[in-house]
Picture 1 (cartoon, protein in one colour):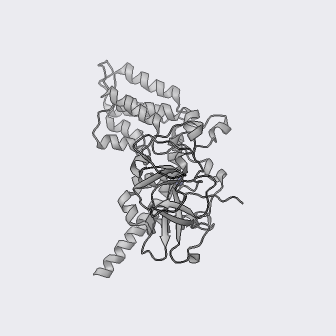
Picture 2 (cartoon, rainbow, N blue to C red):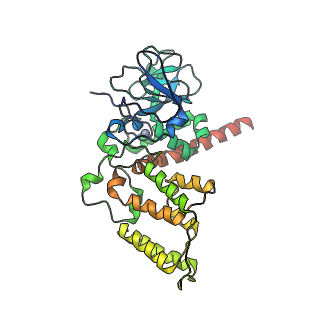
Picture 3 (cartoon, protein in one colour):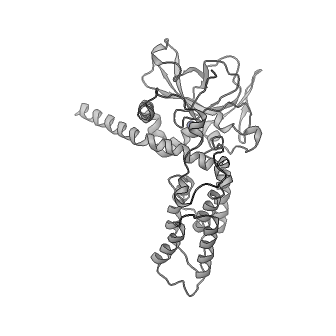
Length: 365
Ligand SMILES: [Zn+2]
């Protein structure tokens, strides 16, 4: 049976890919087998081309949380690419700040750790000096960092592993970290659907995989933010209906938003109404409606105090999301899928941290 290497967070496969693309500073390794090395931060924020040649490249990049019998606690590795025809054990860069795209040197260097995938190789079978690793997509690590805090994660990797294992056991009673099938992971959440009637009638189109698009850098969203920034602050022209209290304006706009079957036509209706009545709504209203919990770019814009046309940005985002064909295969849907998994881990992880802190406190008193 072919071996499937799955991410411990989102449970979907670490894709196999050997295409090489890089858009920043990098250097070529010497030797017969070559790869590009760069800072991991740079690769994490890279925008990947959305063409057939590089289709699965983003989700082929991964880190591993490594455990060894002679280490006090687990360690997070650097980023490497899962390549086709790769021999076992796998090897990852030991430095978490480094990333390598493409082939690794034929001989193991001091920059690499070799590991056996923990799912297939129990920790109890480890010989001295051997590592087991829990693979995690590069992008899932970035999203985890955004939601749980990067420093907290790095300092509490054993808590993270325990939480992930517990969540897996309680969720489906299967062997911890057992790989799910493609079918189970492919058709996942669409949080936006709470305010619309449902996916288009062509179910096959909706079920199209979104797993290969980067959930971190979404080019269409970046373009929209750039346009909304050029707009600056939204202007409202004085009209006879402009004096209606803001609470009433919000109530009327919300009535359209919460209608079953909210779609592109209702977005147009909202825009026309705001323009015709010369209404302005508070920026905070539009910001909250963008679901900043998921669209973290919104939080970044607010924190940076950027001048943005929030109405333009919010309705533009909804227009994107209700283009079902785009959304069904987009990085935004992939992000929603992964964030749902992270939500499932977050409570257990925080509870474990609190319990540990309490235990340490009691021991020190
Ligand atoms: Zn993942």
